[in-house]
Image (cartoon, rainbow, N blue to C red; front, side, top):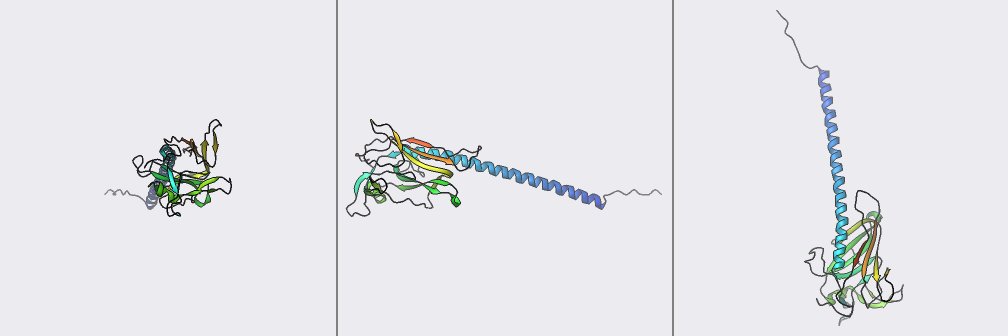
Length: 245
């Protein structure tokens, strides 16, 4: 009688097969994780680029919708209401004015008092440009946000006084991780030459333009950096002419 042939896998062969499958599984896991990490990084760059472009668009819309309004500054402390003064604040780190553009309603929104100001960045790294919106309800309502002109301790000029803006849960971050950020205002008085000033001290006319200078804290060629913005102001009223709301 012939001997029946026997065939099969030894224990060593089984162990080798399991090891190979394990190595392939680990390699596939690392490849998947690397792909997910690359996709996340790409999405973060795209989100950062969208924020940079969105910040420029928002600033442009806000300045384009500038309203030359006057407010009863001091309405909160004077029972009969304050005096009418141009509602505009312009310093190197804070800017306030009224605009037709709303972050919520865009061009279809109601007029808003916008507060653009600069805060320290997260964990003290750099700076961030943020904005608050307050519904504009007319000269009396805006008067609660300002006080009549008082002598400025630095320049000695008589300036409308404003409280310091405060961040809130509704504060919108326009730009983050900035090396610096500052506001400038174009002063155009004929026949004097035009020049940019860091503090707006005039009560008899509006600035011709607004400039927001900023630069990123870290350079990254793959991202759109926050860029300097310059917007022209085209008021249809002189300072002594009140905007009818």
